[in-house]
Structures are given as C-alpha cells and as structure tokens.
Length: 349
Image 1 (tube, rainbow, N blue to C red):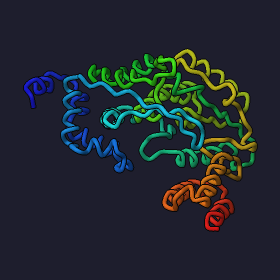
Image 2 (image 1 turned 90 degrees about the horizontal axis):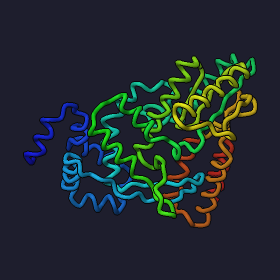
Image 3 (image 1 turned 90 degrees about the vertical axis):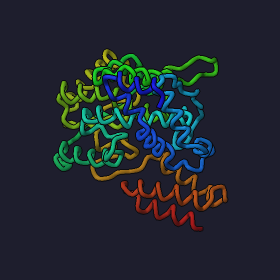
Image 4 (image 1 turned 135 degrees about the horizontal axis):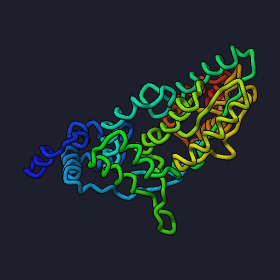
C-alpha cells in the first residue's frame, strides 16, 4: 500500500469510511452484486481480474477520485410499467459496500413494522402482520374495521436530497462517507432534453435503503407522535387499521401535513383513501378482506400471458418453470388453489 494511503488510514478519526474501503468489505460487496448474474457479460469482464478490479476500486475510494459511471435507463413492463435506471457493475459493488457498513447503524432505529428491504422482513411478513392487525381491530371479524390505504405521490422521483442528507448526518458525522453518498445521489438519469432528473433511481440498492431511511421519519411521526397502534409500511405504501373512520380521517390529514412540511413529499390524492376492510384492501400484492386474500388481477393476467408464451414456444421450459415456480410460491398465500391448478394444467396441454 502506498505511503499516502497509509497516512489516510492513520489520519481518519471515524473508521466508517475505512470499513467501506476495506478489501474484505469490497469482496463481500462484489459477491452480493454478482449473485444470480454470473453469466452476464459485464460480470465476466470485471472478473477477468477480480482482485485487480477490486483493488482499483479501493484505490479510487481511498484517494477520493471515485466517480460513478452514467446510469443506463430502460422501461420495464413486468408486472407494471416502470423506468429503471441501472448502475454499472462496479458502481453496484460500491452500493453494496456502503450499505454493508451503514445499514446496521440505521436498521436498529427502524420500527418493527417497516417491512421492505430488511433481513427477515418482506411482503409475506407484511401480509402476516396485516392479518394479525385486522383480527385485533375487528375483534375476530365481529365489528367493522376501516383501513387507510396510502401511497406517496411519485415517491422515488420526489425524494428531497437535502432532507435525506440531513437525516443521514444526524446518525453519523463521517465526512468521507457523506461525500461518497452525495456522489451516488448526484448520479442521476438524464431525460431526452439532456436535463438531469431529480430522483433516487429505481434499481439501485442504495435507493431501496435510503427509501427506508427517509420514511423512517414518517414511521416515527405516526407511531410516536400520533400514537397509531396498527400501522404497517412497505416502501412507500402503508396502511393504518382502526375501528373509527373519523379518527383515521384526522390522522390522514396530519400525516399529509407532516409529509409536505417535513419531508417535502405528499400523499397520492387518488391512491390514498379510507376503505372498509369488507371491500378488500390492496396491499403488498394481495386484495385483503376479512375472510379471503386474492391476487391482484394484473398478477394473474401476467402469469396467464406467460403460460400462453410457453405454449407458443416463446418461452423455454426452463424459463417458464422458473417463472411459474416463483409465482406459485407467492400465489399460494392467497385463496388460489383452483387457479394455480388450472394454470399448471393449461401449461401441460
């Protein structure tokens, strides 16, 4: 190691940046970034000299010359239309390296019912918690239960970087880490007019993590300021269950005011409403009611389309089974026994 890099280590007061830059952390980050992607050309190119490539990244980090490569943006229409901005493989390694080290600092501050992108959590965890909440609020389905089903308007496009950085800086004061995060945030997609768009790019691991950091402020407001007991959040979708509709209406107004004033975002006017549980509440991919769970219509139609593609030889058997088995494992959490049996039968005709 060059003398300048040794001096860097000696002079750093806070060791978070050192931990991010450590070769052991970069190796771990590389392993996570390559998972399920080992056949991709960009991974093979990086791995022509894996150690050399990682050492080059480490050197750039330590000398603070690292700069992310431009994002590649494309449209994904499965299951719904989304604009995905993909980082270069070397940058994804950096994203993992950052999250490896700073996630534990923030995760211990997250509420129990923040369900997305966390170890041991996920949409099935959220689904089970929703079931627990609805039984308690409805007293085992013996009284009415109202649900505020809410969505943040254009969440990833509207996240305020200044607000996010202030939230991060409250939990850690490592200037080198903050500088690196700023570089990640500043690497924005460019629209057709050549203008950089303000956003957190969908597709980045750091975006998923920062989404939880940002909305943890909302979680604390709802749980500790409003004292809401039955609250669940999955990324920018959240639900509140209560027996009193007027109380939920009051909370909804307070939440929207908090979001506008403190986080510079707002509730989606069309997707945030108070619903009777008996009408069915769309949450984490299922339509949830007192006695049943149904899959979203687009989820079912998407699988039907893949069955037809397989029958027309537009999908290989390997690709179809991979897709169907994943869907089947997910769909079994809803009342879908006959549907799953029918689709499997259709695919074998």
